[in-house]
Length: 190
Image 1: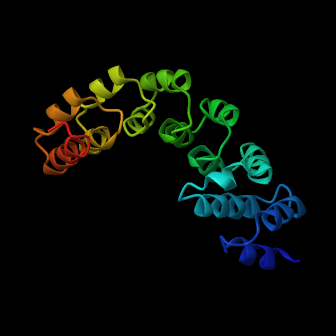
Image 2: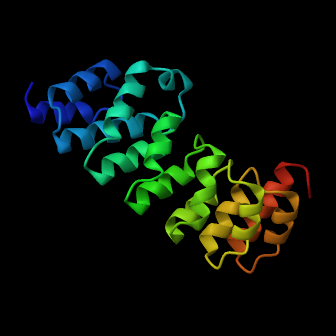
Image 3: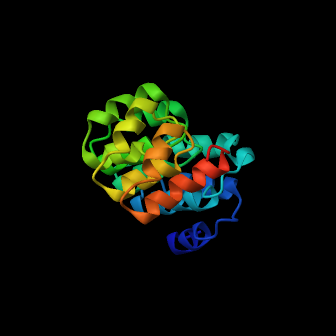
């Protein structure tokens, strides 16, 4: 199989995961193939599939891709819901802030990895606002953020407290108010 064929196969999210691994292993260290494999895994896991997450092949690919020189590949690994915790821990110290920001958004990232992100760059701190593992004290601080999108993600965060949601239901931005009100209603807290 030539590279063009391989790229066409990788564009199909339904191609067997074993075929994806074979392509990856055939074209080792090819950034374009790495990127296509990362995107294939990302697309096929955009809806969380627990069975696929148990796949040793998927785990192996994510581990190998985490070592890519390409930021976009590491970015895709950082946001993947099947990425093993030890890889999220490794990527939490990536030199690229967007990779760290996506580790901050990943719901599998442990709390002890999330806490240092609160002292990181704004884009990384903002990633914490939607993560259900973010400690409540940080959600409370983020609920006062000047960025509307941060407050919106806090309002949508299933871990936000009633107090945070009540405060955000009176936010100056209608979208934030609506999201907080919906969360309060969905939880029977209104």
